[in-house]
Image (tube, rainbow, N blue to C red; front, side, top):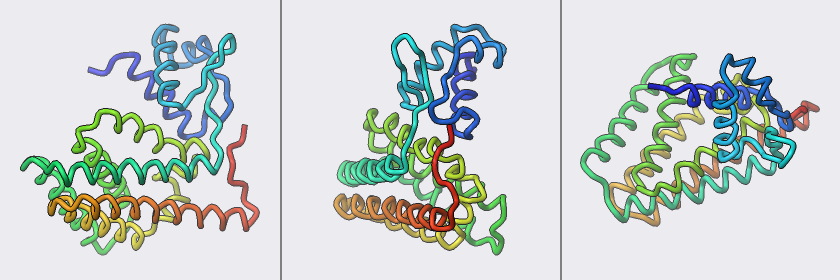
Length: 238
């Protein structure tokens, strides 16, 4: 059962990530409590958790503020992802997988095959791919059996959306950047990564994952540069 605090954490997190609480915004306990219809205790606990996730910054005697993220932070987050997920892939390949884990990865790849077998690429297919893609990357982290990686990965995956809500994977902008062809390339990357893991090729699995994340970083970088060249503001608005 979801607790009140967990529900509040999710509500505040989503408001930060969808831009309703912009970078630099001061989050007041009393205002949030009245807005969400809860006491200040779960609000206080939620703000502490979101501070640990680095979505918020705490200043003594002032309170919690939404973290301000620069575009350089967004690209640096991709670098961190590539390094850590690459490490996870190498560890998994070297340690091996259980039969249950092997089946889980096989099922994810087969689901990807079915998504791209469709002649259409509409909202349903895009949503299915976003879910699969997220599940794949977190399955890698989970299979590494390193409890330190999961919270770090969740933090760095938030950074693009904090910077600009257009970087939400479900946004029109993000869908225009990550076309069906780009998504299919990512699916093929996943296949090659899993193949290397199954073959216990740690160095190759690590290199493939690093390149996979790097390619997506460069795709976003070029899209951002195109927006800026067109005079479109690409920065958080306070």
